[in-house]
Length: 396
Length: 222
Image (cartoon, rainbow over all chains, first blue to last red; front, side, top):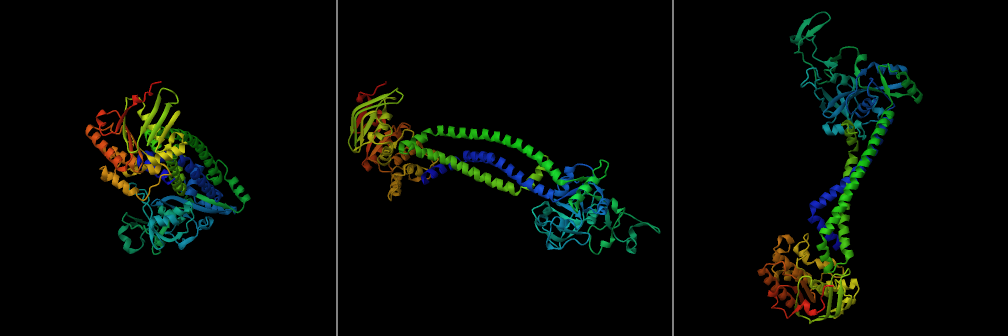
């Protein structure tokens, strides 16, 4: 048997390009449907689990899918804003706890999530290093974000500038990292969490600058009367929120009208959830309420329908490829007739020659399956990222 | 060494029939077989090697009537006792020259290398002038070198009988002479018997005996 395997191996190695192409073709045939099935299965489980853990979502009228994807997975475009007043309004109903979410800004490729302290116990997030948020300007990083940004408590991260080509855009703000969360295997691992006021400061709604009543700032003052001080552009705006300058940060306008991306509502019981949902079902309501599980079920139903078509297509292509590969083997045997005859004339049994040829096929299949297994493992490990990318890029 | 009696062979689907009433070769003999294309020279070698079995009559090699042996026993006999050399060399392109020389040992579990195999391989390769080519592949050799490698492969298991089917057919005149001298030298050195098919009259001088296919008086088109 060792001789049979050796001769088969030597043939495959000598014809390495042909062997490589065969292995690649079979690998793709096996890998594509297998990976598609596993990635979809696993990703849909995770999507459903996160959606199921989020009872109700409030947002501005618009796409329910966009609202759910951005609020649960921090993916895609930030939804249209709704007023912060909804948080108090929901609290007043005593039917649910309201957790505000402000999205849309980033640190590198990581989303900045402005929220309240209730978010952390709600998502079962615990601190691995440092402490929880206490002051504006502080940030707690998800495990993957901390790793990728190489940040730890005591360090800092800077929000992405949006003003390089846009004078009305937001300026970067330096956030002080005070904690890193335990990894959870959810989109929270990628997040940079700040309190809701910090998110507004990042968005330019709140700001801090030198005290214009201070005589040293008089160089920037254009006009001063009993109630107003008008300053020029030379006034120093703080981009780094520290305990020392925190008191200089303030907001203009009514807080109730400050923007949120969404609000997670956690009803006190099932009946409260239904009542709450009923109150905001009116088409005239300025607020939209969605059940994430229903949104995800609708999305996954579409995805699984697409999957069926893809699997049929892959099966047809796979059958055609396998037929071609079989033809390649048969033609190869015809081309090797002289070699086969030589072996038999020297004294090999026909069964031994068949074993050599069969072992060649077997080795190609084994190599293909190993490759497909390896690729499927990689695809499964990065399944969520791949699935999210497929959703965001519009492939699914 | 070889004894054929009243051999009658016909291809299964007709078209050719070979009849050999009597053919004897003594041990150590060197016999050349001449004949036109299609006269049955290669078929006769196949019958001597036990690759084909006659419909009637007997083929005896080294005292063993191989025409009566079952398939497996015939293969065992062939791989142990008979060395084959082909016109087109028939070296496997994906094996090195050394691996090609040792190919018979990989063709049957019954033939295993012994303690002398390595030394025999080195000696054969040196004697035939391919000692420096053992790690090369066949397509890196000249035609003459390939045929010398094929001769080494036929001799590696120290067979009693060498059957050579036009071994010089693909060689230029200079290489023909060199390869034939080499083959005859090796056969003599190993004390083997040689039956060589050829249609080249210039190469017949060193042979003990030359047989024309038509001498059998039985070869005929059906």
